[in-house]
Length: 451
Image 1 (spheres, rainbow, N blue to C red):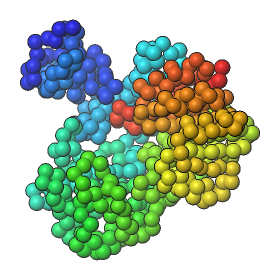
Image 2 (tube, rainbow, N blue to C red):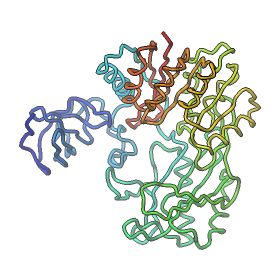
Image 3 (cartoon, helix red, strand yellow):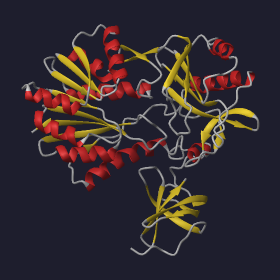
């Protein structure tokens, strides 16, 4: 395909015919694809070209000539520009259809005949996130919180983050003002100077407990005892940490985590069980939808009470412990040692005796089980975005669990993995669960049954 005669900064009138998986409008110029910021299907826009590659390019909407009936007008465009809520300009009912359609399209391309159910959405798709990691910079001589403009390191000052728990937003502002009071400096990324790089706040939805983590370039912060005491003056704040990240890096947390005051953790609940959350714990960020996601996964496991269940990528044990009372035995497998210790502690807190947790890779554990002729009735997998390792696919072929429940956060790797397992498994259906409203992220649950 010959690239059309377009270059950066050219202005064009474009007709938008689709949405990309990132939520950008898709337009064609002589069969050359352009991905257009802030544009929706069925819209005609004036746009400026921002980048031209070999096989596709990017553009930004300048003004809209013909608007989609599904465009939301009353949401601040800053949420699209920063990437915090890239779909906030699209009606929520259409966001749910978009997520269902993304999975369906992937299946069709891979020739997978799997039904995709309607996306399970939220009644109120705003202010749901129970964790915030907000960048801090020094702007006009003041420590300032906000978020980066998309694909840049330019901080846009913000106070309402739209998709974060409103009490987290309020706590970030309170901490910001305390830091300002004591003349603490925000991070200067360009010169690698200043102090506070990030304010991280976690809030347990069901208990209301709050944890604050100050991520600093330096260990020594003047008045840190006064700052800690003022942060703890909010009775909901149970835990204050200092994390030291001295490196010039985009990684948010450094290795060293110091407890400044309060408890070392906060507690929350999922499906009637209590979970202890430390600063680095992996914990789903949407508490109300997590209940629906896990309940759906448990339903798809179709447990009768006599099964051996393996919970792969088990984290702090939330999925395995949620279904332990419906199974004979649960084994959680996780590569991160601290998470395994958290999971064991969570089993003790909840008085669960039929669950154990081991450090290791699931494929190695399953291969050892296969050698010992041990059976797995149900395998629960909740992998990261890169999906299942090829070696784990091989070990699944080796041990052949009767049923697999696959919780996915990436339709592309889900499709790839289902294709790789389709020789020995039938897939009943996939149900998307909207864990991240206003964004393009797609979570889903799929049941696989051994043929």
